[in-house]
Length: 246
Image (cartoon, rainbow, N blue to C red; front, side, top):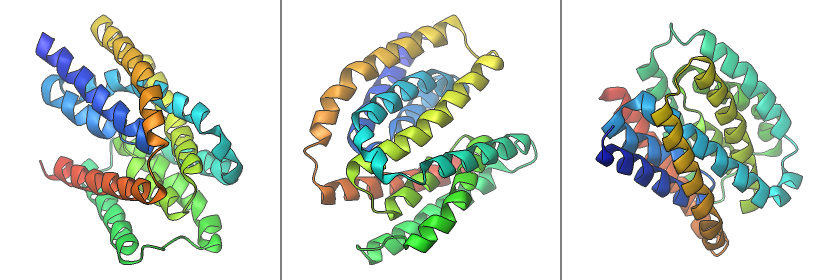
């Protein structure tokens, strides 16, 4: 791994950490594609995992006041674990490109509906009945293709939670998913000394920048926060399509 590779990985982690500290999502969305251009997908995923866990943990603590609005979170996570087990079992038999396109279409449909009706929100009945399905689907996609953020974020955004509740929910869901991912990485023996050192350095970088950017995030109005989330969802949909067709 060259010095340019190392700088690229750390720059990707830094950009992702800044966005995530403000919006509650976005670290892997930025860090993995940037790093993968230089060191490949496997190394990028392994190295970014630990900084992502650190970021999610810090955001969970910072926005823990939002936990009062998340009565559905345990059910979402529980079904997510079941879905992840099924997705992992089907990993070898599912077409990754088709799944990415399906996920991109689902996110795109939600974006169109949201943009056409700025006040759109899931009804209480839909929210209650849909949580198990979304949790399972998110886990299924995570287990099968390593991506669950777009579908989970779209669902949570449609619940129209407060900013603390949104960030707390998505950070908790992603934090647990990332922790499971890191266990799998360890069991599969994907760590090397070089990857581990880079993951530690990236984690320190995240720990330093996140508190500063969380203070910036507090100054973002509800309207701009909503626009930021929709923008990140649009970016994730485009990213999924590109990964599917390239």
